[in-house]
Length: 163
View: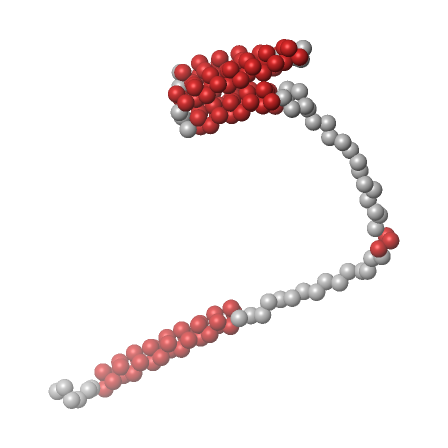
C-alpha cells in the first residue's frame, strides 16, 4: 500500500512542483529587476550658456559708511543683565531666585538712574523701568510667570533703546 502511488496523487505532486517552480522563477525575476533598477547609471546633463565678456559686467562701486552706535552705558547694561537674569529664573519657574534677582535688577536700575541724573541725561526710560519692575514683582508673587516674563522682555527692550 505504501509503495504504490496512484495516478491522481502523482498529478497533484506535479502540479504543486510546477507552481513552486513558477513562484521561484517569479521571485528571481523580481530580485533581478530590482537589482537592475538600483544600478541604473545617474543621468548627467550638460548645459552650455553663451559666453560673456568680462567687460560687460559692471563693477560695483564701494560704499563707505560709518555706523553710529549709541554710547555704551555700563550701568544701564548691568541693569539689563540683571533683568535677563530674572528672565532665566522665571523660565525655570524659580520664584524665590527670580525675586532675589529682581531686587538686584532694581538696585542696578536705581544706580543707572542716579548716574544719568548726575549727567543731566534723560531718565524717563529708567524711571518707567523701575515702575515696571514693581509690576513684575507683583506678577511673580501671584504666580503669573508668563505675564512677568512678557513684562521683563518689554523692559529689557526698553533698556536697549536707551542712548
